[in-house]
Length: 338
Image 1: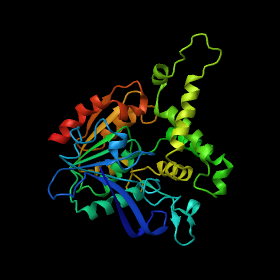
Image 2 (image 1 turned 90 degrees about the vertical axis):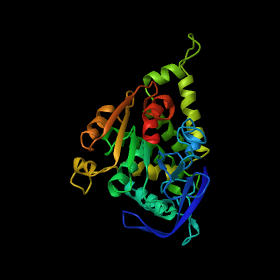
Image 3 (image 1 turned 60 degrees about the horizontal axis):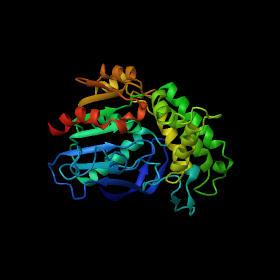
Image 4 (image 1 turned 135 degrees about the horizontal axis):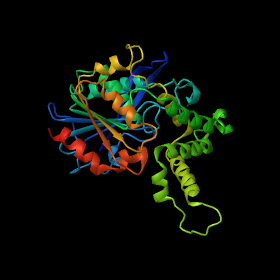
């Protein structure tokens, strides 16, 4: 996919703060949008970027289910993320230093505001299929409520319309891990809080997977080992891996953003908000997902008119949305080809 940047003269956040010359990074199919062609818009998750060929490579790309040559595919990078959009580690022109804690608090509705700017800049009037998984589903749901006439079909995968106390608890433990690193609050370098973020990632990974997944992939090879080490080594490896591509300030702000997810806020509650969606919606749950449990997602289906509900089976918990591509293909293919 092709990388682009859009600059907004002034981007106003829901918290009341604003940033001048705000940059929004996004990827599209490698050509100009042709009016009337089918548009598939993908909303990325917490630490992903706007190139779904990078993190959803089993489904997105030339000749694949979400064919970037056949359809016009778009994915926009969320505010706060370090992948090209103005973020806490971007330089504040007023000070000549990174924003750090001067960066505004980000909500799911701010993410949608940035997406709408990209949509309008591209000249897209209708989105034929909107896909949002995990945190991406938060703002995909928001967008379907804010611009109901724009979204024709939508698939919300392993996500909910309101953050649960359980997920908020997980996010708080990750923020606590980052804050426990003294270099984070010092805010002297974009690398501040790095060790804390590695710990936060290790905590997050436990919620992304499940007992069965760890038992399959991280079981000790030596039955006579004195101490179990394989899963511990895996946790540290995943922290180091994220540390090479992300930063603690973006992670901390986006972890806060997760807790803003409440589609019913100011709209008379979740039922009323979800009931205002006009898109043809498909909901997908994962049977072993511990942070977006099937019963939560099934409850949403009661409020969205004409909604379809599916459960996919996985031994890998929440991360099943990245791994169970054959089951997802069976669900998404009719939505794309119709």
